[in-house]
Image (cartoon, rainbow, N blue to C red; front, top):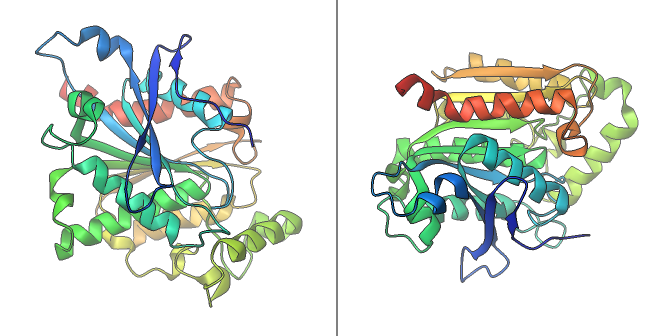
Length: 308
């Protein structure tokens, strides 16, 4: 699989680097992105305003892709530039070599690592200097959307039970789920008609999580079976859906489940008509992909606008 190194991207003015996250898990790392126009170029400005921090998780059915693939690297360059945010793109362990919950555990460790910078004295100088840990967002596409969902739940549960002191040091403002990977044992909506794709996804789920005795009704892949939804640890959730993807109706169901769970936040949905799964990555300059990017960016900056 093709990979690209971190770089200074001339088209967006975004600078990136790779960092280690955990000495105990050598293959856990992240690619960090900063927009140089408002960071390094203003380094001498003592009144420089820190930027929102986006922690991003990639897709690939827990088995494929990395933050280092050209498709993802290019997309994060554009996203960081448009949003004027700092990003930590997590390189979690993948199946089948590392079955779930490895990806969840790594993502949680990465979020804890990011929290170390809340006082400006963490291990990474970029996050210390430029990231505002009181404006943290989680996002991911496909399997990464599933991970972002679970990190939001784990964060909310940790706040309630006070089992992880570090969560008090950051403010999780919102979560963005881009066509998240959810499934269930009983097909619904597009899953009934696109049987080939559904069968492929079911197979990938079993490959990623062979210990799931309930199959696709395991609460890790089926939010309908999870009693913790009301514990979502942020006030806002944004879901991007593609009309032609096989999981479309599962994602709309997720929206309904959140609303009915007793969670006190707000959930928004944007559906792209006529589009398929990950269209925004495959065709990033298309009208629908541009609209998705615009809404993504506005979600990250709505608090900035309301306070301005």
